[in-house]
Amino acid sequence: MDIVGALGREPPDRESLPRWVAPLPEALEDVAFRLVWVIVAINLVGTAFGFWYYRFQFQSVPVEMWAFVPDSPGATLLIALALAAWAVGRSSDTLATLAFFGNVKLGLWTPYVLVVFAPRFVESSGPPLYAFLLVSHLAMVVQAFVLYRITDFPPKAVAVATAWYTVDLLMDYFVPLTGGVTHTSLPYADATPWFTTTVLQVAAAGAVALTVVPLFWTLGTHVETLRARRGRGGDGSPR
Image 1 (cartoon, rainbow, N blue to C red):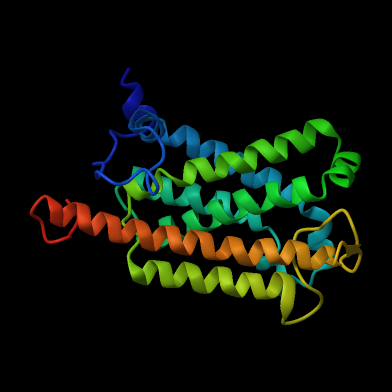
Image 2 (image 1 turned 135 degrees about the horizontal axis):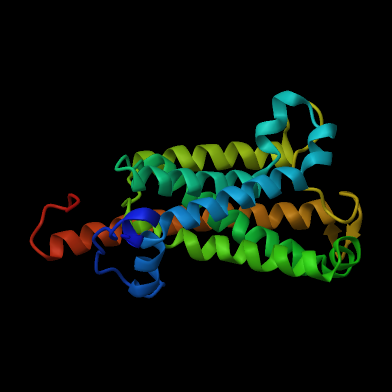
């Protein structure tokens, strides 16, 4: 039986890019593509768990705002769709770029708040779930760094992802269209004082900063990819 054929595909070409935009070993990236359906399945299971985790928050938010509630499950769904699209030969730059933004942003933001508000998070969720949330979200960041193999993050796709995650940021923390803000529930009330500021502002600061990070990384990857292609005598277009 052809295991690669059943569970994935042969990996796409790999550009020779600087380590800061392609930090994973090539062998690890290749395994991800050869087992792509396994990774898709894991992300779909994670998405289902995430929607279950948000079940109480859905009940307190107007239906028209539900799209802005499940941040991390939305990101894992996006990467599952992006990798599945590649696996069936229908890669989408927009899907892959949205997935990169979501997995980097939420994969870093969640550990950030888990660490900052650690005592109450551990108390409310218990050490096993706390550890699972921390590790699984960091894994989201890792998996995002295989996506440059299936997209060069063109500016139009980056613009779409930036627009979506900017709107999501506004709904989560600043100006919801209806009802209250839609950010992930925190273990303290939003207005609770936290050093010189409040719990909400601490969470929002991390979210703002981590919206900029994937924007920088995607544009940097795009530039480095064009340089690599032109360096080997091409015109910058994909191989």
